[in-house]
Image 1: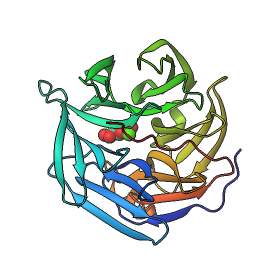
Image 2 (image 1 turned 60 degrees about the vertical axis):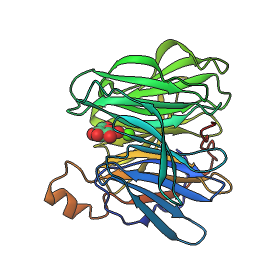
Image 3 (image 1 turned 90 degrees about the vertical axis):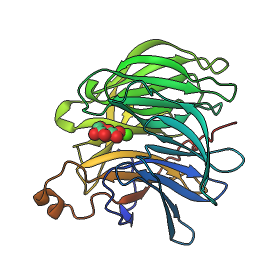
Length: 294
Ligand code: BGC
Ligand code: CA
């Protein structure tokens, strides 16, 4: 089990569907979203300042862009946004012909291509897909038959991509071709026992260990992807733990998002800070958030 200092609630936002933390190292801020609240949030650890921007639709992920600005995904599109004046440019449309779906988690690979997955809004049908967008465009479909496209991560050497379709309860591993962005040889790296919860967002530390958030599981779990063994867990006082990312100058602060959606009044009373942004210090540093390269 990894060691950590005490878990802290850093932003008590009570987000409906807090998601998608990413570390914007240039601006020293932790970016995250409230998908159902239609907001982009930023937390500045050095000053404790918080900012938020309201969107006109669900905003399902936010990732920094290498030089300036952010890329966000809305239900059916990928946009580059300048948070200073809220101007935006459409980079790619996503499944405009499938309104029963929406975009969900997105992340950049080590070369700065954006990967975004879609999901069935009812969370039942395998109508979703996983796409890749590189600066040369266009948007390419890479995986199909997905129900709730979720966690994405790459191994420290960049040779393996990890991917979660939540209802499968599995973390899949693929050989990753850094030159083409292609993936091959899917295999199961981790199976999360259903009684623990459903795997959602994930990240990787510098040793290649996977940190997987469990929806309905009140915890972040740590796994060895080479043998599928559970190495440790961090309990979170919120049932729906959605995603996590390493941040800070030393990349040893793990930020964790949570969600209130679907919980009844009794559970919310028991876990009043559900929907907040939490943080723990880790012994092992994580891998940095990769910015989008355009
Ligand atoms: C989705 C939620 C979904 C959850 C389940 C999240 O990434 O945005 O809509 O309920 O995953 O794990
Ligand atoms: Ca997610």
